[in-house]
Amino acid sequence: MGLWDRDHYVIKQKVLAIGRKYFIEDGDGNRIGFCHQKAFKLKEDIRIYTSDSMDQELLLVKQEQILDWSGTFAVTDPTTGKKVGYVGRKALKSILRDTWKVFGPKRNEIALVEEAGGALAILRRFIAFLSFVPKTYNFSVDGRIIAEAKQNFQIIGDTWFLTIKDASAVDRRLIVATALMMDIIEQQQGA
Image (cartoon, rainbow, N blue to C red; front, top):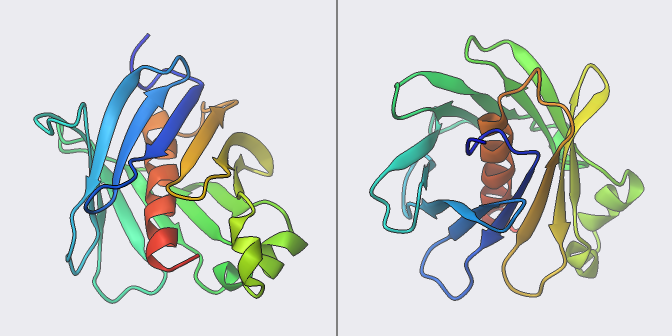
Protein backbone atom coordinates (compact mmCIF):
# COMPACT_ATOMS: atom_id res chain seq x y z
CA MET A 1 0.00 0.00 0.00
CA GLY A 2 1.36 3.42 -0.99
CA LEU A 3 1.60 6.55 1.13
CA TRP A 4 -1.55 8.03 -0.35
CA ASP A 5 -3.71 4.89 -0.38
CA ARG A 6 -4.58 4.95 3.32
CA ASP A 7 -7.93 5.62 4.95
CA HIS A 8 -6.44 7.00 8.18
CA TYR A 9 -3.80 9.68 8.77
CA VAL A 10 -2.65 11.53 11.88
CA ILE A 11 -1.21 15.04 11.71
CA LYS A 12 0.75 16.00 14.84
CA GLN A 13 2.19 19.41 15.52
CA LYS A 14 5.68 19.23 16.97
CA VAL A 15 5.69 21.18 20.22
CA LEU A 16 8.56 23.28 21.51
CA ALA A 17 9.85 23.86 18.01
CA ILE A 18 10.93 27.04 16.28
CA GLY A 19 8.31 27.70 13.65
CA ARG A 20 5.45 25.35 12.90
CA LYS A 21 6.48 21.76 12.32
CA TYR A 22 4.22 18.76 11.82
CA PHE A 23 4.61 15.02 11.49
CA ILE A 24 2.22 13.03 9.33
CA GLU A 25 1.58 9.40 10.23
CA ASP A 26 -0.45 6.67 8.66
CA GLY A 27 -3.18 4.98 10.69
CA ASP A 28 -0.65 2.44 12.02
CA GLY A 29 1.56 5.12 13.58
CA ASN A 30 4.28 5.02 10.90
CA ARG A 31 5.75 8.43 10.05
CA ILE A 32 5.25 9.10 6.39
CA GLY A 33 5.76 12.86 6.19
CA PHE A 34 7.12 15.99 7.79
CA CYS A 35 6.08 19.60 7.28
CA HIS A 36 7.97 22.75 8.15
CA GLN A 37 6.26 26.06 7.51
CA LYS A 38 8.64 28.69 6.22
CA ALA A 39 8.48 31.76 8.42
CA PHE A 40 8.25 35.39 7.34
CA LYS A 41 6.87 34.78 3.88
CA LEU A 42 4.51 37.21 2.17
CA LYS A 43 2.75 34.23 0.63
CA GLU A 44 2.33 30.91 2.44
CA ASP A 45 4.85 28.30 1.33
CA ILE A 46 4.13 24.98 3.01
CA ARG A 47 6.21 21.95 2.06
CA ILE A 48 5.62 18.35 3.00
CA TYR A 49 8.70 16.12 2.99
CA THR A 50 9.24 12.38 3.39
CA SER A 51 11.07 12.98 6.70
CA ASP A 52 12.45 15.69 8.98
CA SER A 53 15.75 15.56 7.06
CA MET A 54 13.78 17.54 4.43
CA ASP A 55 15.70 16.00 1.55
CA GLN A 56 12.74 14.79 -0.53
CA GLU A 57 9.54 16.78 -1.06
CA LEU A 58 6.17 15.03 -1.24
CA LEU A 59 3.86 18.03 -1.75
CA LEU A 60 4.03 21.81 -2.08
CA VAL A 61 1.23 24.06 -0.85
CA LYS A 62 1.60 27.67 -1.95
CA GLN A 63 -0.64 30.69 -1.62
CA GLU A 64 -1.34 32.13 -5.04
CA GLN A 65 -1.63 35.84 -4.25
CA ILE A 66 -0.35 38.05 -1.46
CA LEU A 67 -3.52 40.10 -0.97
CA ASP A 68 -6.16 37.40 -1.10
CA TRP A 69 -8.53 37.56 1.88
CA SER A 70 -10.12 34.27 1.01
CA GLY A 71 -6.72 32.69 0.30
CA THR A 72 -6.33 30.26 -2.55
CA PHE A 73 -3.60 27.65 -2.24
CA ALA A 74 -2.18 25.50 -5.02
CA VAL A 75 -1.19 21.94 -4.08
CA THR A 76 1.52 20.59 -6.38
CA ASP A 77 3.30 17.25 -6.74
CA PRO A 78 6.98 18.30 -6.89
CA THR A 79 8.08 15.10 -8.62
CA THR A 80 5.89 15.80 -11.68
CA GLY A 81 5.32 19.55 -11.32
CA LYS A 82 1.60 18.90 -11.87
CA LYS A 83 -1.15 20.45 -9.77
CA VAL A 84 -2.95 18.03 -7.46
CA GLY A 85 -5.60 20.69 -6.88
CA TYR A 86 -6.44 23.92 -5.10
CA VAL A 87 -7.96 24.91 -1.77
CA GLY A 88 -9.71 28.21 -1.16
CA ARG A 89 -11.37 29.68 1.89
CA LYS A 90 -14.93 30.93 1.68
CA ALA A 91 -14.07 34.14 3.50
CA LEU A 92 -17.50 35.56 4.34
CA LYS A 93 -18.98 32.22 5.32
CA SER A 94 -15.91 31.48 7.48
CA ILE A 95 -16.67 34.44 9.73
CA LEU A 96 -19.25 32.28 11.51
CA ARG A 97 -18.11 28.78 10.57
CA ASP A 98 -14.86 27.78 8.86
CA THR A 99 -15.63 26.79 5.28
CA TRP A 100 -13.23 25.86 2.48
CA LYS A 101 -13.66 24.79 -1.13
CA VAL A 102 -11.51 22.08 -2.69
CA PHE A 103 -10.83 22.24 -6.41
CA GLY A 104 -9.38 19.72 -8.84
CA PRO A 105 -6.30 20.36 -10.99
CA LYS A 106 -8.45 22.16 -13.58
CA ARG A 107 -9.97 24.42 -10.88
CA ASN A 108 -13.33 22.67 -10.90
CA GLU A 109 -14.93 22.55 -7.46
CA ILE A 110 -14.87 18.95 -6.22
CA ALA A 111 -15.51 19.16 -2.46
CA LEU A 112 -16.55 21.39 0.40
CA VAL A 113 -14.93 21.41 3.85
CA GLU A 114 -17.05 22.76 6.70
CA GLU A 115 -16.51 23.07 10.40
CA ALA A 116 -19.01 20.84 12.18
CA GLY A 117 -20.91 21.90 15.27
CA GLY A 118 -23.34 24.55 14.04
CA ALA A 119 -24.04 26.76 17.06
CA LEU A 120 -20.83 25.70 18.83
CA ALA A 121 -18.79 26.79 15.80
CA ILE A 122 -20.40 30.23 15.97
CA LEU A 123 -20.03 30.55 19.75
CA ARG A 124 -16.35 29.57 19.53
CA ARG A 125 -15.67 32.89 17.79
CA PHE A 126 -17.16 34.99 20.56
CA ILE A 127 -16.43 33.09 23.79
CA ALA A 128 -12.68 32.69 24.43
CA PHE A 129 -12.68 29.49 26.54
CA LEU A 130 -14.65 27.65 23.83
CA SER A 131 -11.58 27.87 21.59
CA PHE A 132 -10.29 24.89 23.62
CA VAL A 133 -13.16 22.70 22.42
CA PRO A 134 -11.75 20.48 19.65
CA LYS A 135 -12.94 21.11 16.11
CA THR A 136 -14.21 18.68 13.51
CA TYR A 137 -14.20 19.36 9.78
CA ASN A 138 -16.33 17.41 7.30
CA PHE A 139 -15.17 17.00 3.70
CA SER A 140 -18.21 16.50 1.48
CA VAL A 141 -18.97 15.88 -2.18
CA ASP A 142 -22.53 16.62 -3.30
CA GLY A 143 -23.67 16.67 0.34
CA ARG A 144 -22.12 13.25 1.11
CA ILE A 145 -19.35 13.20 3.74
CA ILE A 146 -16.24 11.57 2.26
CA ALA A 147 -13.69 12.44 4.96
CA GLU A 148 -13.48 13.85 8.46
CA ALA A 149 -10.71 15.67 10.32
CA LYS A 150 -11.07 15.58 14.12
CA GLN A 151 -8.90 17.65 16.41
CA ASN A 152 -7.71 16.05 19.63
CA PHE A 153 -7.85 18.19 22.79
CA GLN A 154 -4.37 19.34 23.84
CA ILE A 155 -3.11 22.36 25.72
CA ILE A 156 -0.05 22.77 23.48
CA GLY A 157 0.13 21.77 19.82
CA ASP A 158 -2.52 20.16 17.68
CA THR A 159 -3.20 16.58 16.68
CA TRP A 160 -5.68 15.82 13.92
CA PHE A 161 -7.14 12.40 13.13
CA LEU A 162 -8.10 12.18 9.49
CA THR A 163 -10.52 9.48 8.37
CA ILE A 164 -11.19 9.04 4.67
CA LYS A 165 -14.45 7.22 3.99
CA ASP A 166 -14.58 7.58 0.20
CA ALA A 167 -11.99 9.50 -1.74
CA SER A 168 -13.03 8.40 -5.19
CA ALA A 169 -13.76 12.03 -6.14
CA VAL A 170 -10.83 13.66 -4.29
CA ASP A 171 -7.12 12.79 -4.35
CA ARG A 172 -6.05 11.73 -0.83
CA ARG A 173 -2.97 13.96 -1.10
CA LEU A 174 -5.32 16.91 -1.46
CA ILE A 175 -7.33 15.87 1.61
CA VAL A 176 -4.20 15.53 3.79
CA ALA A 177 -2.70 18.80 2.49
CA THR A 178 -6.00 20.61 3.11
CA ALA A 179 -6.24 19.40 6.73
CA LEU A 180 -2.64 20.41 7.43
CA MET A 181 -2.96 23.77 5.72
CA MET A 182 -6.21 24.61 7.54
CA ASP A 183 -4.53 24.06 10.92
CA ILE A 184 -1.59 26.26 9.98
CA ILE A 185 -3.82 29.08 8.71
CA GLU A 186 -6.23 28.88 11.65
CA GLN A 187 -3.34 29.08 14.15
CA GLN A 188 -1.93 32.14 12.40
CA GLN A 189 -5.30 33.83 12.69
CA GLY A 190 -5.59 32.91 16.35
CA ALA A 191 -8.66 30.72 15.84
